[in-house]
Image (cartoon, rainbow, N blue to C red; front, side, top):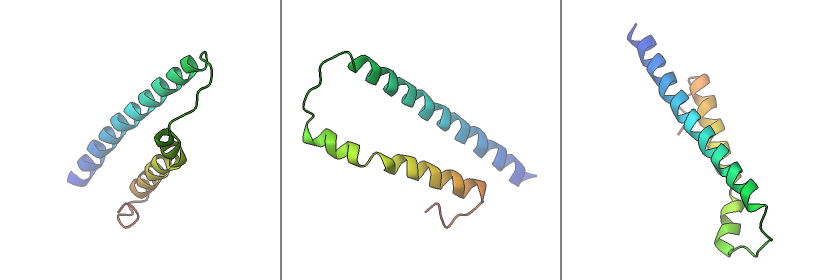
Length: 77
């Protein structure tokens, strides 16, 4: 029974975090739409470097969710 309770609590916490990720993503996309009204500018090199690694957070999230769903502690490390 304790295992079930821990599972339910974990799912509740994960859900809250995923909702925050979704809210942040929505806010970012709204800001991008607002910025489209301005003329293009040259971006600083730091911004371009950050954009080059944009797939890393998505891959990390996918790996962690896959690990949770399949109860695979090895792949989450």
